Image (cartoon, helix red, strand yellow):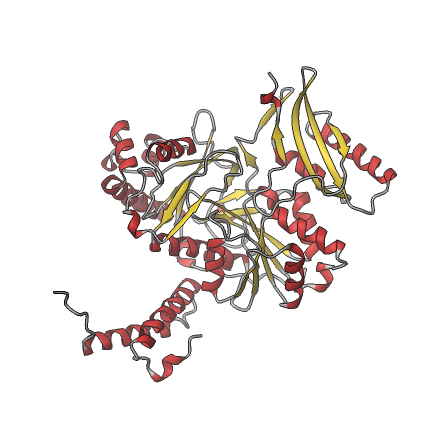
Amino acid sequence: MVKSAGLTPEDEKKLLSVFKILEELSEHDLPVVKFNCRKAKNELWQALFELDLLPPKGRDRS
Amino acid sequence: MKRELPHGYWNPKIELMPKAELRGLQLKRVRQALQYAWENSPFYRRLMENRGVPPGTISSLEDFCQKFPITRRAELERDQLENPPFGTRHALPLETALRYHSTSGTTGKPPVRAFDSERDWLWGADAWATSLYNFGVRPDDVVMVAFGYGSFIGFWGAHYAFEKIGCRVHPTGSMDTKTRIQMILDLKVTVLCCTPSYAIRMLHVANEEGVDFAAKSHVSMIVVAGEPGASIASTREIIEKGFDAYLGDFMGTTETAGMIASTCSRRCGGLHINEDRFLAEVVDPITLAPVGYGKKGMMVVTPLIKEAMPLFRYATNDIVILEQGQVCPCGRTLDLFMGGILGRYDDMVKVRGVQLTPQMVEEIVRGCPAVEEFFTTVENRDGLDSLLIKLELKPDTDSASAERVIGEIKQQVKKNIGLSPEVSVEPRDSLPRFELKARRFRDLRAKVE
């Protein structure tokens, strides 16, 4: 029997904290950090959106 | 020019790294890549066993460059023919592939097929992003990628890199030239990405349509790759003047799937090598001994991180000159290929004792503003090797001007190359036009028995 993949409250916390960190780093001065984190943040945003976990400030994809 | 190119470093930690430290980083990455290939790539495992160079025998970059064999395109082709479709080089199962691509096939040889993992693909785009940012591309740029988006890798990496930087990207895969021209004007495109041949083609069509790009467009940067045109002075001048924009040369190969070297915003005439991602060597094409700084040789390149299809000491056949990074005022310590790609050893032909590359002819022909298109052949005429240059001239060229152009080209070729060519003017639209990888040179002598 296949075990269903659930999301624990801890997982949710982790996802949100990673998003917050990426959001901060998307404003970094170093282009290699800024642009890669912005892209990663926007990819993670997709997961948060689909899981209905978006933080109020996370709706901006810029 | 429309605006100064902004100066900046994508990753100053690497770009300003002291040379000894950078070499240490390269060695670490070479050794990791060798170990990975030993464990996962049957092609390289076999090669290392047969040549007696398992990873443990490589303890310095010198060791690697002296002991590890060169990989040639013919070996990759043979491996793929014997083990279709991808050969035995891959280090990951095909199921993990994210992207397929192949060489352009313009040389007439069977295309080399490759696939990339997701990490490879991101790595390739990041190498492009580094180069584009360092040339001057910024998030507020509006980009047109004028490329067919087929299986040839071409500007795929550039597309993703522009997106990563945050530019507005307009892919124009199936559009014709006139539509693209109108789009450049309507959408206020600031960066055009294409081959040098296609940039010139656009200028010709724009001229026919009465469009003056230099006056009317917002294009300030032209990103070219796929051909050596950007490093040919006369070709560069036509494009930069025609668009009133800066031309950046970007050098990569399908087999390595990443940006190897590119023009920075200070435009010193050389292309900085992405040395944290690639180990570049310049060797004598016959003896394979390193030629050192300042001398012409063949580029041999090792991508330092390739997950799906590792590659070591790949003989590109490109003719380059290595120079120390400090000659560029940008401050980067990364070495340069001075003058970009100067030609290809497999394009080089001997005509009456003279070593000739297509670029030598292009340099002269593009210096004549009346020439719109050209094609060069080397043929055997009554037992004599002959250089023939066919020209298409701009529509408003009268017969007296045409005669002057013919005379000028003959004289320049004699003076600079040492050959007396036959030069002819052909009817309009009779010579081939190119969007990708122009081939304006053919050696027809082999067909004469």
